Length: 212
Image (cartoon, rainbow, N blue to C red):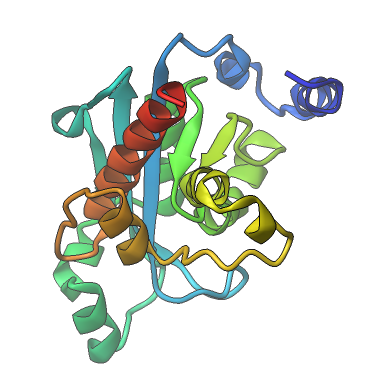
């Protein structure tokens, strides 16, 4: 880890409210990650809610979808019918779901110290941090790997030298990335399928990088 990362990690450990969560700072197991995705009611970190969380383990080159954590999360208020239809959920699904604090606790125990992987991971983490901070005193402390950034680096290396500029135009849309990597897409685009596809893309990009 770089010096800045070590300083930040030390600060996070000092801010931790409850020593019971100290295991989140353990050394991550070798060649293990967790692909993470959330379904939310919108894209406003301050106002919208998480309604589903999916976390899929990755061991080496294996995506272990059968060992996943998948949660429906109570949003805390009733959602309009059109929002439910867009999310592919029913009101009774949400009513029977997991309260947000419990959902984040379960996620943290499931992930442990393993690095998080996701497509445009920053938004999902920001949504989860809103719930995690009152619990931990900090946001999610695990290392984070954004698949879109890995894909950008992969595509950038493929460009002719004269096109390798800060303004290099690379299509980072999820469907385009999956197509370019020759990976299958999964429907519907719920949290579980998003997590599985991000995991597959991560494994493929790891292999491409290792192969030069």
